[in-house]
Amino acid sequence: MLPQDYLKAARVPKSLEPQTFGLWTIERRPERRKLCEPWSDYTLLHRVTLASLHMEPGEVVMEDSARELSRHLPIWLNAHGRILVTGLGLGCVVRGLLASPRVEHIDVLEIDRRIIDVVGAEFYEEPRVMLHHVDALRVRPSPDAHWNFAWHDIWSEGEEGLQLLHGRLMILFENHCDNQGAWGFPRWAKHLMPTKIVG
Ligand SMILES: C[S@@+](CC[C@H](N)C(=O)[O-])C[C@H]1O[C@@H](n2cnc3c(N)ncnc32)[C@H](O)[C@@H]1O
Image 1 (cartoon, rainbow, N blue to C red):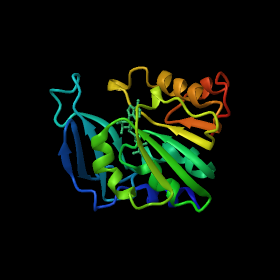
Image 2: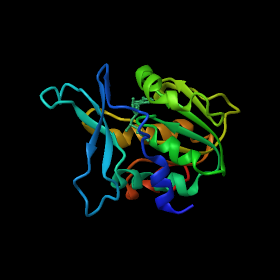
Image 3: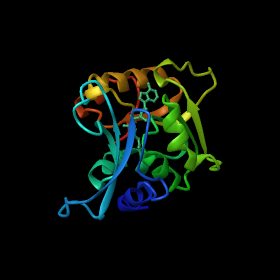
């Protein structure tokens, strides 16, 4: 599969309708960045935070623009076998992974019950996906747990300390994963990690 095939597969389906649930809002916007974006609209996931109380409908946590989706290409282009995903969000990483026949199983760790109920519903009947309602940072994997790849994309308010959290996740799962990676993980930090980094 080509990179653009993964981007297309990862897009949020129209069946996931714009809505507000708890502190979260799913919104669909017409695409005005026509020069660099191939699609006529895109979907955003917002969350109300203390810092964003004055900004309706809150902080942007995820969007399915080509620019954002392409940051997940390292996992889509490399993944095979058993995959661990932290952070369901809009489900884009999971959709992209499902497009690959080389992916056998995906465990998704998501802290927010509402995200699982609203976004995760699409994957309830998907035999290759298992959704787990847990705080990924507090998981203690069983000794025999093994994944070929892990991809971390959790979220922190204002992205504060986000890469430290992703680094913590890599350390937590290092004995259980052959390869790991994270959204926007800095290149310079890759050689500092005690794990093989994708991308
Ligand atoms: C940036 S979004 C993930 C976007 C996702 N990669 C996608 O493809 O749409 C971050 C997600 O991580 C979840 N999250 C935040 N902290 C978490 C934690 N400690 N454990 C598990 N999930 C967490 C949030 O609830 C949110 O759904």
